[in-house]
Picture (cartoon, rainbow, N blue to C red):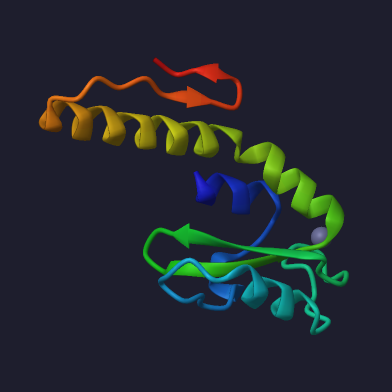
Length: 112
Ligand SMILES: [Zn+2]
């Protein structure tokens, strides 16, 4: 998934800086892009950053200008879906183990 994203944005994963193995606080990301870092794709000033998991390399910072942030977001929607589906599956499993009835409601309606 992230390999496809990097290929689409013409980014060499080896050029990306290693990121911490934990999810960075929002303030960490804000401070990172306030320091005039270039976009990983084309070298314009980065306006956003996110951590991506690169197979074989681990978590890496993906600093992007606004157009490449939007492009990356468009290329990653199924990841968000799989994350939500995974959370719902975990909740269902926990409810089943606890013998509890469970109704999950998401922003776009009941997940079941
Ligand atoms: Zn860019």
